[in-house]
Length: 296
Image (cartoon, rainbow, N blue to C red; front, side):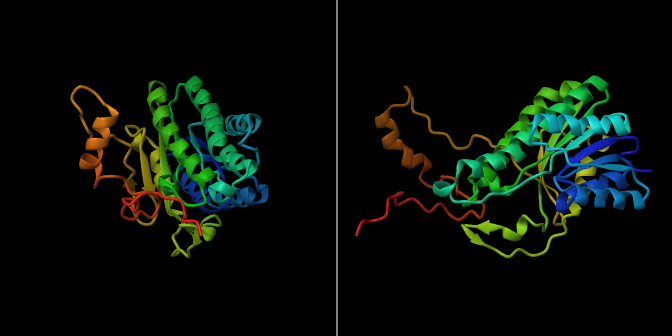
């Protein structure tokens, strides 16, 4: 017996890495799983792996960046397993390039998979779950890159958008019994092999990508029926709350904000409180100004 017996789920990007771990854990806990991946052969390998362990799964290569693909994926789950109770949005891609050199194609291709794919699959799943009247769970995927990471305008921007969509959907879908959360997963994958910090490729220690699946299975279960609108760092031997954006220190000027008042008081109030920027945050480096390079 598992905590997801009788449930059915779709997992995008489920053929490899972190997504594969999601599929295996969901199936281990009793869920029937549609393993979606652009590489159908890899999806079928995961399906076979689940079948060998006595689970139920089927493969899909539907293009979740399109409305037709997202609808087909959800429909496959309903047709084969009778319903859908969970959608796990894991599919991703990267097209790293510094901002001034990034092309429209590089920007759009990442948003299509991450933002549009997450939006479309979630909407198709939520409509079905609402009509079933069963309640259910949506689990999105964000990244620490949305704090800001050199060369990842498209990826970081997508992950920031997904975080904000997660908060919004949690508010809108609660009345239908649909919970919406997200994970910021840790794991060594093909994408992490080319990880860059500050524009430089870094070699990261191995982190088992399968650990994230246990937390996803939990979020999809009734044990988490009180959890929504949350983002968690997962994997690497821990689960950790990612705090939501919030207002901090304030400057109040009686009588209203004026340019003269702001110039006079801004540094007094915020001079040591400006936010550090970027994925690997260092102390705020710009107190002497943000200046163009000196001309020869």
